[in-house]
Image (cartoon, rainbow, N blue to C red; front, side, top):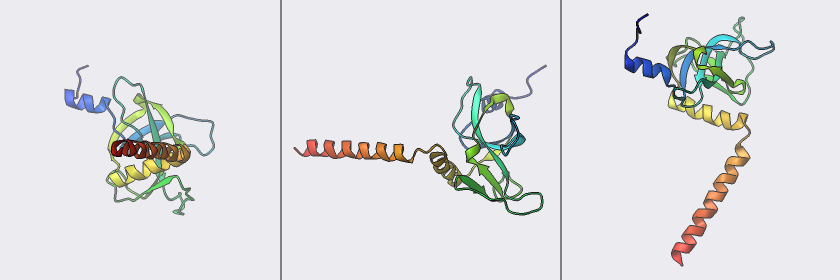
Length: 154
């Protein structure tokens, strides 16, 4: 069967960028409250071919079937229906990170706006409990700058 995509389209489909929104077939779990099946999802880091997997977070509606707003938690990123890839207000569920096979990514729906990529990154820090590590890195770097400045002045 002949390839129906141009070389540029093929390369675009093989390389994913942080914030790209796709239809993703999230793996079936053992039930509970984890996202399963085909949903919109967001790629969490730039991923180039031949890497075989992608880390993604699912997107779900902000309202349940009875049109009642779902409870949210601090790591949820609320996405308005004004985003081009959505038809209703939704939640990016950052606590439900998934490693999925590249083949689980279906149709590309769009890309998060820069403001929502920033919220994604802040939520990721919280989900992975990296606040203390980041603070220590910043303090260490500031100390290095101060020491370098003192040496330069001496």
